[in-house]
Length: 310
Image (cartoon, rainbow, N blue to C red; front, side):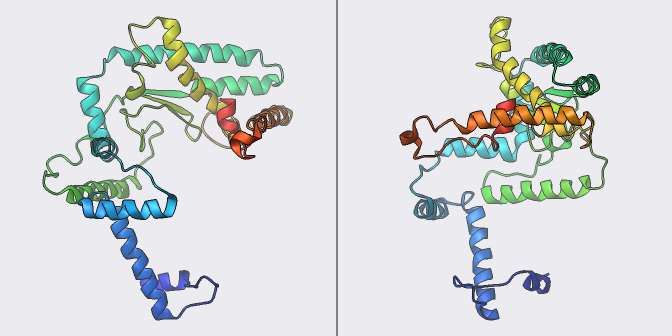
């Protein structure tokens, strides 16, 4: 491995001059040592945490040190995302919200379908194809019908006295599972690295699927105490936004199976591009109207086009 690595990496000083092998490897060893300490520092004692925090401040300017309770919450909800999600869903999440959100998604899809039917800049064949993609879009709401093995993957292996050791155990088990999954048939509706506890929603153009985790089916976005107008205005807006990503600057290039192909008529693709360019130009102007506020910077309409469309 190291012999191959030496062929790939070449050490040069700040002037671009090649360095001697010994100096080169000393620098590489130093870098690897630094990255090891840097990656582990937040899981070690305060001396390491403070050292890395001071380095951050010198490099990027002073930033507030993360409060301990926030760090504990973030680590637990991310590193043990599935276990945390399971506890939340089983103990706090009203199960009827899952079906209510599915009903909301279906009704939004019906209105979206009707809107596509009257979109005049699309030819009939492209409209039908777009409606078929919308029909094929699957919804994963609140939590999976079958909980994955990762919920209990680390059960009985973690302990209270070694935080860094626990990080190693969690990482080892995750990599071990990932090496097995490489040889398994992919599941289109797999939640991936997102969890039901997350306060967000997602659309994947590669599988034409939409995820609405339990974490966002909650106040202030949703409540049984709210009237329908308020729920649709909050959570419904988010659901419609994610659904529209299936037809944004990236989504419109892929069909209902997530395959990139010419599934629209060429003239319809051109019509889409014309309208997308117009929207990008509109967003390019945001920030220019009061240049003193933003030091001449402004929105890049092409970079934000997907979100602007949705």
